[in-house]
Image (tube, rainbow, N blue to C red; front, top):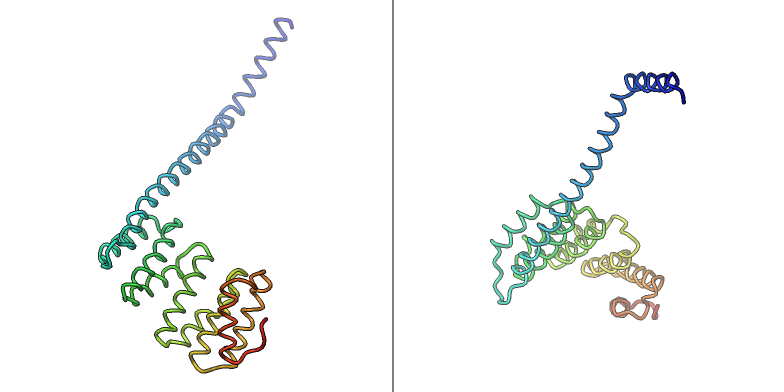
Length: 220
């Protein structure tokens, strides 16, 4: 390449840089900042998860005391911290379910119901919401709040919960003395369990016993 050709190439590069240089630098900065932001986000998420896990361990220790006495105030404080700081993590919904069980075993059904209602309203995973609905329906069954329990189970659950929902509806109907409705709900539960290849499972046998007690049909 001759001197004149080299000079012409340099002049073209200078002209291109004057026109596009700032744009190129801007794009590079966007890419670099995006990469740094993504790394920062992942780091923050990791820190949040680790801190939530440590708080969850504290909650486990309080919710499953070695003695028969539950420290309700401490449990409530840990739950409050978990929800305020890590409410968007799975640990919050897991904590509320565990606390609900602890409160219920301590014969504080109101506190248990409050935690289950929180899960139903705020949990990010449908599975946790449906577990909470089933457990809350059981408490309502014990309180003879049958219609509230049935309303709670009115929405269609994920497939894995359909049999359990039908079984719990059967319990609520049976407690109301609505034998035909209860029989239909138990039969539905049995059919769903069979479809899931659970016809030899303990839950299938339990539902069959309930159906037989109502004078239900022969084994499903």
